[in-house]
Length: 64
Image (cartoon, rainbow, N blue to C red):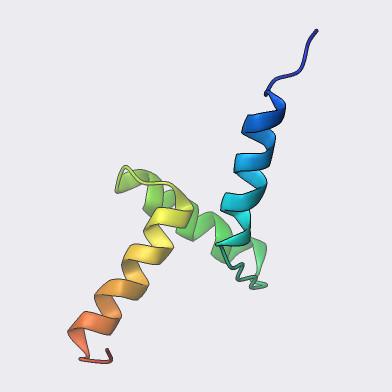
């Protein structure tokens, strides 16, 4: 098999990733399963579900 990306795509991806930050949390497996099920029911990825939940809390409580 050949490369999955061209060199230009790899460079562009590397530059894009420099613009992002990472957040890591540790939770119990049961909690993760609960959140994953809720996200699935909402038709969302877990990442999208978490970010939307945070945004809704910020808006609801006027924390901006």
